[in-house]
Image (cartoon, rainbow, N blue to C red; front, side):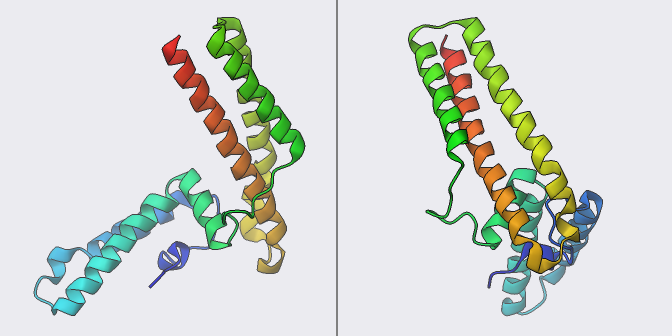
Length: 178
């Protein structure tokens, strides 16, 4: 049985949920579904409590982490399925250029060039974050039938951020070797 985490916590779907409310629900359900409190119940009920306890842990782990939460919401709306992800060609060209610069740095280490690539990745990330913030903030107030455009923007943001994360990881590995 697949349960929506936001429904499980009786919270509205949001990319920026009320962290305190999330934590309160988690702790309340942790107490309610703690296996020790159900040790004398039937085997079926103990299994159900264990399932709910696990669901509670997974829901909290996902919803309390901004990246996991974003991926979760996009997945719930079918927006992270393979083959359904297209990024703007100008962004892909920027990423390709950054990757080429990193490959060149592997052959000819240059601290100044490394710093320039890091700065470029940081600037791209900051621009992305600033651009998506109003969409994330406004999302819960949108009528459900007009959320698809916001979700598309968030999907693009998420995918771009994943690309930049991979570039950052390449830079980190490269920097560790040099």
